[in-house]
Image (tube, rainbow, N blue to C red; front, top):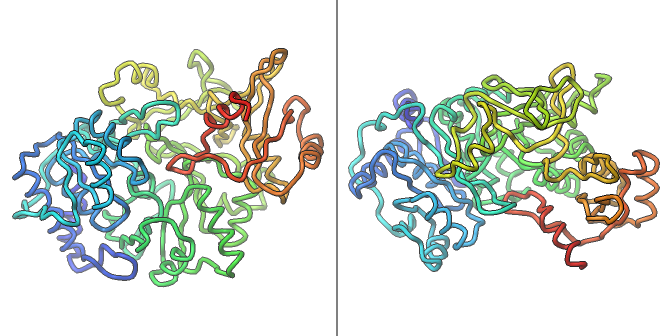
Length: 498
């Protein structure tokens, strides 16, 4: 089925239900949302776009983003979301690799991608008339047809295009209702993180139920703006990276904000440290749900529901809170050894997943597909273990594990300890080559604290071989456009002896 049908049906069921907002201002009801998407589809078809063609979206968060996306789907084409924070040259690589026939962009980004010599036609949505006679209904598509072509963040090389089908997005959306939260027509979804990524991919389930879609006027993440919009709309759901949750907590503590109107904050996309989520729950209450996914299995590997994020009565509550929850409904998850054989509860290995949310492969990259999909299993590259109750604890990416003197050190375990010191704001642990031990543990610290205090903290809490042999103090950690710490940059920092 074509996912655009969900919008078409909602426009039939409740045409006057409010749909799209820019800040507090209503931009379109569901009838208007549907009509504008159908007009974009009609225009695309007039321009020669055929089912299966790729059409990119290089736009900051705004209501037109969703109109373009659904217009692309109505036309039977494939949406190629490009993070608005990328450089024009990076966007051009995605346009070239995907073979995009066209790119919708806001003015500033249109200028940037044109200056970088875009290989396809770029449509400035702010200045170009891109609507024609509306088509009556979305063009039929098979469940296995591509809907999104999502490019990975590329922290270790060129981004790869993840092929995401209509079936994958349907399964992921319905799993939201069973495993993450229950979206209703009374809710508002707030897009404070890039709509090209985790925040935007939850739009489908909220279209399905006829919820309101709110884009901040700032086009991005601003805690004060989020608090204001949450108070105004009420029943607000949003996706946030762990760094965003931390900043929201800090802003609320500094200003006395309570998060009134926030109903659900789904967090994921990076490690959420125990101290940070404990503080966030103390500040905002029972509004948090954790998900674990990858572009290759979008938002769909596991979930930790709000009652378990909030629970402090269970004897294993801390262990469960640092886990990523249990497998979501449409997938199987197992921990495998180096040969992909399943491991028993408590044994460390690679997290493997298969099911209807897993990609069929990478776009025109058979070698990477064969390496990542093994006998039907997605090899996530994440290391961890599962307990007897099915809770999955993710330690680190396989490439981030440190082997010192023949013993494995999982950086996150060390980071969790260091973050318990009140003077530490951010931390990232990496391995540095060592002539005798193979690697030694090095901690990069952002905060106001001395090495002696951190050494004492580690001695009191973890084995000596896990203790950092060096502390490097920075004013900030290098991050990519999704807020993930770039450990490759930290390793380069050590290699260059800075």
